[in-house]
Amino acid sequence: MPQAAARAASDAHVLRMEREFKAPPERVFAAFTDPRLFAQWWGPEGMACPVCEIDLRVGGAWRTCMRGAQGEHWVSGVYREIAPPRRLAFTWAWEENGARGHETVVELEFLPAGRNTRLVLHHKGFETADSRDKHSHGWGSSFNCLEQHLQGE
Image (cartoon, rainbow, N blue to C red; front, side, top):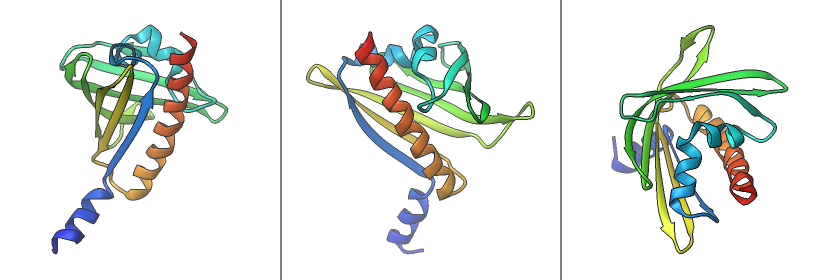
């Protein structure tokens, strides 16, 4: 397979997003790792997070419920890397009927940008480009919620 074609095929399975937040890396990192803070903003706009369980250690599990007009959506995973306040990596799988679905990996970098944080997300291992695109919408909307949360603190 030619190099360009191989890259295009692999790009279909990776979501990369960047967003700058008006808060230092320590605050943005805490918003992802403190269950009390996480529950206040997690999920796309219009969703609530009634359950947030975080065992913040490498090998520790996390699990959340996002509740909205269309019902509940459960997602869980295991932490692979924790390097406060610069890097966080964890697995991700939706739960349906008590079983975990296809597992992907989320890697977050919290980069200083003056007084702000540039958050870089790599979410990889998607089975299809459609799944990647749906997650792009979800992450973008969730980042809107995070931005509002950080401004309100």
